[in-house]
Image 1 (tube, rainbow, N blue to C red):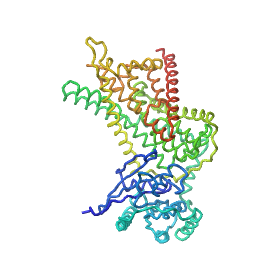
Image 2: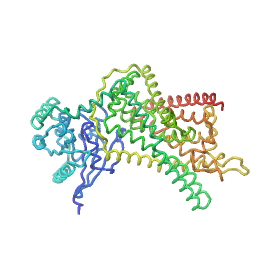
Image 3: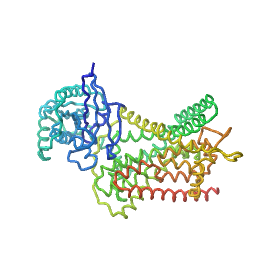
Image 4: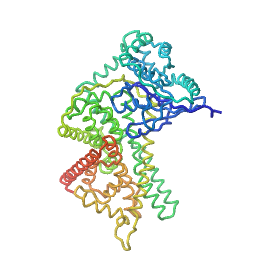
Length: 629
């Protein structure tokens, strides 16, 4: 019935903080695919939705930009896509330009540039609720008439305006169908920036009425909050308190769901043991798959809680303020506050953090930010930290209210941040002093986080984590099980079979290198597959220790196994190792692509492994001294 409705592809373009991504989420929901552009590591987010009449739409969320005269690499992507200049990227059928109703002057400049391309264009005037609160009256019909394009008012965080937008999209699609056989190209810009600005000013004068100065009601609330948030003394204290709360919550809130996942994994292992006869298949499933991948899956609640707080701070408008707060501190080590957002992104994963450095204009500042991004404690480290802390740090309160385990986790995150600042200071003197740039960031109004966007963001992280568990980690665990099981133990063997396996021989060989920092051969085995991704080390330890036990000694719980097998100095040494060690090949690969040379990924791996070994050695020796072990 709807076969005649030709699918259409539309590009979503707008300024940063205009609600573009919120509108993208509203249209596509969870039907999104996140990848990178060919040849670069800028995020490429494409989604799809089906209109009420059955027409299928693909929608491409392009990086935010202020102009089609790009000055940063991510803005360049947007310029190339809408102009049809990007290889392997088809010119979109139409463009949906999103502008902020409270800042039309800025958004309409981009709209005029897009209109001059000659492609079909729809203008979405977003955040109309805020405009009405500030008594900014916008004549939508006058805008549409003057621009000679469809104009729709929307509130992306709600459903208002979506139906009208879908109707305009269908009208546009029908007009596109008439010209299906006509090659579609983007024309060159025909007006200078000065001419565009004059046209914008005239259009605003004709279609926008400000009843009273913007901000007499709403803006002072943000100003009053910022008096505390941006205060030179209280601001950093508030920021530190928020970060401290996050890491306390990671342990306190996650305990119940983690216990449920643990019991489910144990029950699954027992069920497989009871169902399958003893043999190679049972051992692969119980000790390899369930014992390995299940050891990582149990930390999913803690990762979700961490991302919950990051998304809340981002959606509420707090993150740009944090960048301003840290600008002075980061300037002392040769960085600007603009590096804060990439470094904060690195707490999720160093890869998007390194991608985000493309917004830094100064090449030297960008390179230093790339080099220190892996020192931010990414979410892949969290399973390793949580495992060791739970096994060796008592679950008790300090000062009556604070969790000791949360304090240790907070200390590890602080250690990564302090180390990053010290390394940046070293590069500052090694590569020359950075140019001083005033930090200019847009501070959006404070707002309550949108529940729908928050849930979609968390769902994306859950999908990414579980996909890694079900693909990369699972494949590596099967490979590790094979290497740990063959060849079998000789007759009259006095050690578990893994001791005589290929993996066992490799672990004992590496033990000569890592013995001075307290690592045994089982840890050495886990470090090797852990090079693919840090959290793989937990799965590897689960497999290695499951295969190292037999009979009544076998336990599906990894924590008691390592608590019995390791000393406290060894555990502390491994924590220190993971603060620095670059156990993520994907990160080094991205650095290679971003810098277009092998020099910097090699330098990064060398200095991070060096720091990791030195830090672990010092930690291990001091722990031996103070514990008398």
